[in-house]
Image 1 (cartoon, rainbow, N blue to C red):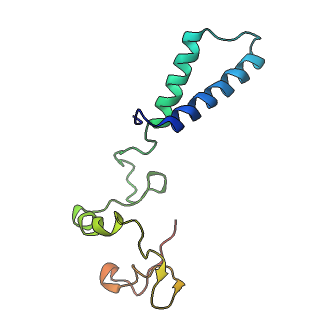
Image 2 (tube, helix red, strand yellow):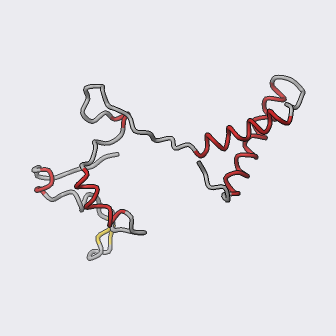
Image 3 (tube, helix red, strand yellow):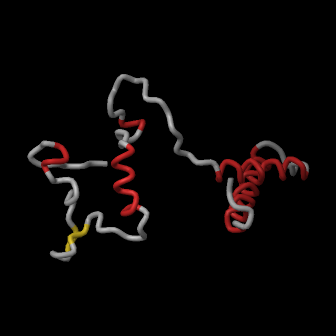
Length: 123
């Protein structure tokens, strides 16, 4: 649920709800819904907006890395090791500080990580 003091989100949801109500009014009938319905519509909009769209699921498809179900799972050790870096405000994800230029896959090309000669990560 969103924080109670997040007025910008609530304002957005109210405006979005009003647009939906106006659209329905012109398409279905020329009447405005009762106040209770408007409040319920706004409440549903706030709830939908504040609900996380990404959820944990069990991949029972038989496909190890299923493209529609996101990435391969990380082990707890990898997550713990990377947490300090990822929680920082900024990191050198695709930037080489010594060369001063953007560079891809710098952090993944170590053959120890995969045993491969080289690595290419795609989204």
